[in-house]
Length: 251
Length: 216
Image (cartoon, rainbow over all chains, first blue to last red; front, side):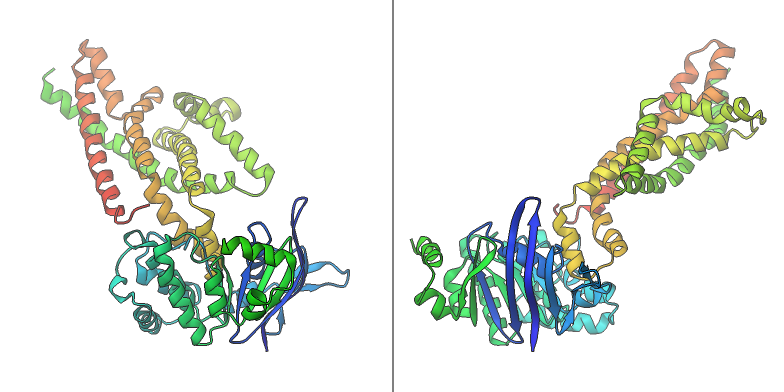
């Protein structure tokens, strides 16, 4: 079953049509990487999928339920119950966006407890296990400002996982990190891929995208230019624009 | 008049000075939040009306506002001027200080990055919970020094209540100074205010320290 399905998505900011027409679906357990030049619409697509931005047109479906739909007059509407859909996915930001006044443990367990109303003791146990798994148990009582960028991003991944999402989005998770810190974050994402976590990753790390993905999508100019298995996109590139883009990366 | 008698007489007014101070804070601090939220309202009309309201309160003397609240009803409706002057004094002070606090709050709220709101939205916090749990604690930390400034000013501004003859410390001091043709009561008042503000400074300093367990 498709966890996420986006059909004919369009999105403009003023006169600037950032997403012209994009359709994509993500199956359970699939890891999809989205690559492409800056300003091509990758991040906007992710923000539309995570309901941070509203699409101008197109249907978004999570687990078979429509988030957007056309009413009798043909106008696009959003479901009244967005809260339900927000429990299906979670998002890891480029800049982490951890809560600076909460300790690591509180950052991770506050949302399940106070936003979802789950049992505090049970959540705490789960979160401690997750932190342990990510090699962060010693940092449980630290504050985000006391951690390195890589550690902060790992905490924000744990925070997203603590919500038990069916699908996890990453918006350039290593772009704000020093090159030597990207490794530890990529390792964690790889580990999640091995556990068959459904993920959509917007990234500029080509080697990583190649290694971790089931499918790679190249987006430019608000459309999907090329997509396929990592082999197809990276080694057997069909499209000229994709070739040009990947070449610039290899240099 | 002996200094000790002077101090004793002025002390009776000190209780009233404290009443103005604490009651004003009690009403103005939360009222400022309401005004700040109205000022940031998505409705253009509400936001503009609030902006005008704040600009009038900040742009005219507190003394004038105090006179307006105390004697305005008499001139407008012919109602008698209330004998308990504490009520108009606290109303005028609370509204005036709320206007100043609201701008401090607004600056603080707008300084929090959009990312904090987005993270909270993604994690399923309601708007109310986002504000109370995520935004407000960070705002308080940031605005505390500016709020301390206002509170220190408030301590000294309580003396403005003498314009409506409310028997707080400074009003009494002024009466003694007039009747005794002496400057000493003003010096006593100065010492009172300074000690009061030293305590305010100490308490707020502790509060700031308690909140600085994380880097912003």
